[in-house]
Length: 232
Image (cartoon, rainbow, N blue to C red; front, side, top):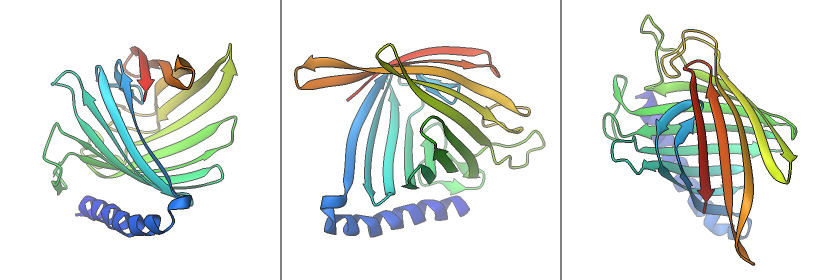
């Protein structure tokens, strides 16, 4: 029921937020887009092959509500639908995300042992030269310890942007701090070391497409991935 209440709360806030946004359209920021990626790699985990990943969001005075999804070209790849409610001011940000995957019970199943939802809380700060974020699963199918107890699976990341050779780069390291099945960890584990770069590909004098590539290493699983993508 806890997970169900979280989703209901996010939806209720959306219905409250949308009319307020309509009354202040000049201050509302909205975006819609999609990425086409050669592989879906998330926090060092391989979640699928070539995928289309659409996104939609609205924001007002630091408060934001966004939807993100992933659909693999291969029919066997997991489909995903995420809803995120967040707030940011200056470099500080907090959010709650409802992740849903189609490889289990349907969307409206929220039972303690009968759900494909994962609910995650995030808090972070962007210092400009370095951003720090902490994520913790607090409800849903969030992973367990070896003894079967809830693990409150967590992930912490450090990311540093820089510019080199005319490209925008980001170096990142991520780890899960304790035992949990969600990240397949028996204790503290570094599960993501990555380096990414992005550039604009000019299509016409007034239109360009962002191209990005990212190399990821997962010391925990010994996985290595190189992904390229286009943003629309």
